[in-house]
Image (tube, rainbow, N blue to C red; front, top):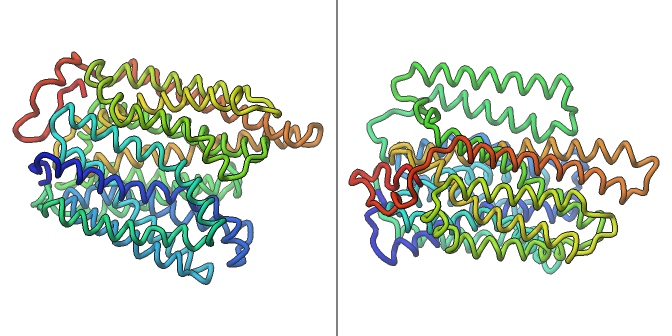
Amino acid sequence: MTHNIEGRTRWLALVVLCLGVLMIVLDTTIVNVALPSIAADLGFSETSLVWVVNAYMLTFGGFLLLGGRLGDLYGHRKLFLAGITLFTLASLACGLANSQVMLVCARAVQGLGGAIVSAVSLSLIMNLFTEPGERAKAMGVYGFVCAGGGSIGVLLGGLLTNLLSWHWIFLVNLPIGIGVYGLCITLLPAGRGHAHGERLDVAGAVTVTASLMLAVYAIVNGNEAGWTSAQTLGLIGLAIVLLAAFLIIEARVRHPLMPLALVRMRNVATANAIGMLWAAAMFAWFFISALYMQRVLGYAPFQVGLAFLPANLIMAAFSLGLSARIVMRFGIRWPIAVGLLLAALGLLLFARAPVAGQFVIDVLPGMVLLGIGAGVAFNPVLLAAMNDVEPGDSGLASGIVNTSFMMGGALGLAVLASLAAAQTGELATTHDMRAALTDGYHIAFLFGAIFAAAAAALGALLLRTASPHAAQSPPESSGGRAATDQL
């Protein structure tokens, strides 16, 4: 149990936990910048290079649910430290890699460590902060790290690759990982798992992990293999069969990996659906707008990172204070709806960005709206997904919401990239290439806006909320539902 830490120590522990999470979030984008250098150095072909990314995505997406449940069973701090250790050692192996096989295998281990850290960090924060106002502030800090870390990765990746070499995008994790490990031992007391006495549902763990890994592989490889190919359809079909087997097992086993009552909670189910749609929209923003700025406007990677700076600063202002006040004043439903509508408007602005776009006129307005939208909505989405869950299931709930974001983002990016590529391919023979690319990106931005608007509608119509003033009531003594239904 970690929620008995008092005073300043809790906030120091939050900073350390967020540093660990930041290390994981950075890794999702810092590698993309260095891929050309990695390919040239280790001799990757175009088709084999994708495994530097896919190996990480497979294990990361596959083990989120299992990692969260293991935290519930055996202790969140213990699993967090294990994840940090795995990720740090794998980063060392990646940094020292002198062959394709070594790098890809180390990336797979990195993904496993990252899944464990991501799955239990949110539950640690929820159990550290049980008072509604403090919890909202703490989740805001966590939300800023998750939302803004990707842009920092673009800047840092370009800087390290240009000044040193691609090896340093991995080696930079070593001092961070060692520092986070040592400080967590100092600040977080050891504790038994909340769900002690239960046994691990091995059959459920195997089926859901295999299902998620097959689904992730089918999605990330869909553009190359073809979405209607026998390989893609077969893998998705097998993933669905395994998921159905998992649900049957969970309905019958005495100690299920995922109690089905958890996903039947209205706010939990709705928040995860919102998370999937929103992740698809945000991936459209981050990756497609980065491609637009690089391939159409001719920005260097470092300039792309700077272009995201206004949105990051706005998200910081909301996440580190304003968002908590908004949640305490208005609850979770309307901030989610309004924030996601603003994000949808920002994507619509990008959907009209021209070939000869200018930063102040065609990029900055969309960035501002998306920064405000993300800053307003991210905190209450996480609260909606986690707040009604008992401490014994908090790791699992954290794993579920992270899986929703990851799967939504991966599927959304794959679909939107396909739409953009198809539109560009149709126009490439009759239009200038930059114009063809721009038209393709417009389609992706438009569908991203539709995803964000759909998520806003779900939040407005389905989330259960109470009076904002109910958030001021003290948490339950059991620590189970620390906030009220409003949070």
